[in-house]
Image (cartoon, rainbow, N blue to C red; front, side, top):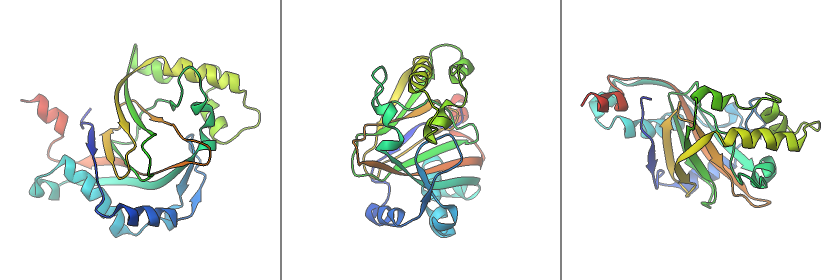
Length: 230
């Protein structure tokens, strides 16, 4: 890992403006195996807003202005909505209530999430593997397409099979850190860190977030390797 885990409350100076803007966008179902909707890329925001948000995030990692000026980066960012109906099975999971699939963002060097819903009943958990790192991610054995089938509402999905593999997967990890979803809170973590969503939505509620995946960060140094040099 190259980057520490971070939490910043009151991230935006005017969060209601950002939230209202996000609510005005058009959303669509993505092709990936994750729940909810993401704003259409062409409808989201101009380059200036995209840069301003991600600049603020990166300044947390590189606070020295001269060093920050030398940092190169590339990111994919989006507003995301998840409704109760999208993850109902996870909320009703008796063995691990409210827990989403644990994964890492293998294409992201650093992942940042900003919560824009006015409740704190959801969040994000960071985990570590109880045994072999890769075997935990590959613990779904009966059907590797289960996540995609559930998130895209495949009518042939067998829910008992889904629960069996989901719980088998979740039980190979241990909780390390839990961030609740306070309004206007930003969290960030190394993309290789196992993590998963925590859901506590009620029928009719939704979770609105801004999420940014930094696929590349080119900098004079990286925080964790630099710390280990001390």
